[in-house]
Amino acid sequence: MSEHKEGKKKLHLSKVLGPMHVWALGVGVVLVGEFMGWNFTVAKGGTLGAIIACWVVGILYLTISAISTEMGSVIPEAGGQYAMAKYLLGPLAAFNVGLMLVFEYVMLLAADLLVVGELLNAFFPTLNTMPFMLFTLLILSFLNYRGVLSTLTINLIITAIAFISIVVLVVYTVFFGSADAAAQLATLSNGLSHGFLGIIAALQFGMWFYLGIEGTAMSAEECRSTHRALPLGSLIAMVSLLVGATLTWFVCSSLIPPDVLGSSVYPLFDAAKETGVPVLIALLLIGTVFSCLASSNGCIIDSSRALFSMSRDTLMPEFFSALHPKHKTPYRATLFLVPIAAVFAFTGMLDHVITFSIISALYVYLYSAIMILRFRKMYPIGTIKRGYTVPAYKLLAAVIIAIVAATMFGMYLGYWIDILAATLFYAICSVWFLKFRSGSIDTNKFFSAENHDWPKPKKL
Image 1 (cartoon, rainbow, N blue to C red):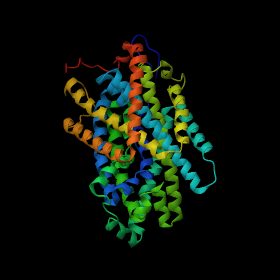
Image 2: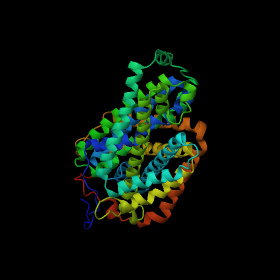
Image 3: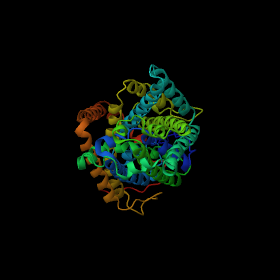
Image 4: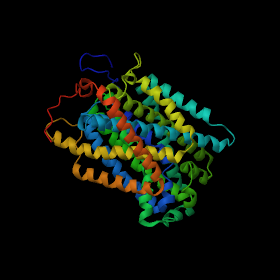
């Protein structure tokens, strides 16, 4: 239970989550990427290029999940990679990582709302979808306001239903689909339409299969047993997404021509329509809506925890660190982010909103590669208890840097202005922090490690 403590003691979130709640948070945030967005890889790299991009980016996220789980299992605080940066890199880097996490998830939330609007317009072309998008945001924010356990329990149910809908569509396609569909996949359709460069360009949208899975580390402080729940829940979540991503590529590539698939707004729903089976169409419509709701729910949790942690550590105004006296939720941080997400959703610029989210995530991943190297130097194996130990950490850090660099290059080919704008935004925020905020940091609160029986770190 969260309470006021004296001296270095801080407000704490309730420890109520188990491994499957961590799974629901990780998969819930990401699963919407299996229902939309990933298919633009087909337009960039062809059918074969799409699955290559899916697996290459899958390696990136396996690596990110592994190193985040090792560090997160040792640092049982809300904030995920922000909390890691706080202890390993210092205030300025922590501020940047925290801000990047906030915008990664706020932008992803805005994208989810835009997809809900697109779905409504598909059935009601003249409908003004903005009130429905705002209503969805307010309902999900209210659930988060009331408590994380009930919120993630709902996420667990709707995420499971959405995931099952993909499996059902795959089973139908394999055992009851037409021979033409199997033949279309066998030829790999348009294969590598733009060669190796097409694969590089496809990496940006391949991230949509997994974007946000690193947010499982955000729940560290709210796990009943961080050493058990975080590694187990994160591992199951990543395996689920790898399987789901491959099945999604398989069924959509089997049922939808590549020129149509590469521009579809909701490819799995379009794949279901290709079967002509009303039950499947209805099931995938439900799955698409549920995936958007689960992702939105998870994004609210992750973004609010990042802002709450920054505020609690005095990097941001302490106003946002307040916990609800009854529900023990960071209600001010949650409510503050609602209008920000709504503004970006109402712009209607889905590709730019998604791109800003991806750029923010890529910068966090670069910081993560640096942090695992520093973490192992500061706390070698045997000096501190770990819930999970990642093998070959130097190699994994190099893999992260290489794939992030390749993805950034692919994005530069089509969205160089977005990269420049995002980089400039974070640079300006860093200047603001150094000039107006760094002098207000309460070092007792920022460097408090009350939850850890840590030895002194080795000198670097």
